[in-house]
Length: 145
Image 1 (cartoon, one colour):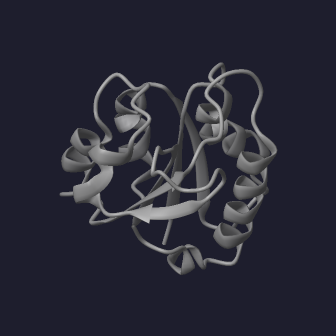
Image 2: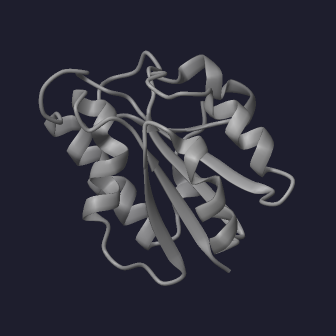
């Protein structure tokens, strides 16, 4: 079983850069690959298919109207409603494209505090928590929206 973690975001937009930050700081986790998709996750489809994961986890900043740094699993049908939307195409289209070959797709949103300057401490703390949950294979413990 291979898990691919697609880390999405813009490094230059404060907490929207949390996905790439996670890709940069992820420790080695058995059977898990981290991929920095930047702001164009749709350009990662060939790499995703090449890895042929059994599970795909998308990580992105998401405006969920929750306290900064809050983690939530976002159901596929709700992804468009909560995206920070600095990406070329809606993530829902990417998921629709991939789900026939990767039926286990999970979206993890991190509530941003700021979309300017450096990453907030809240976002970094959320990233550390998320990395621990990934290492322990317990991301399903994250509450769902």
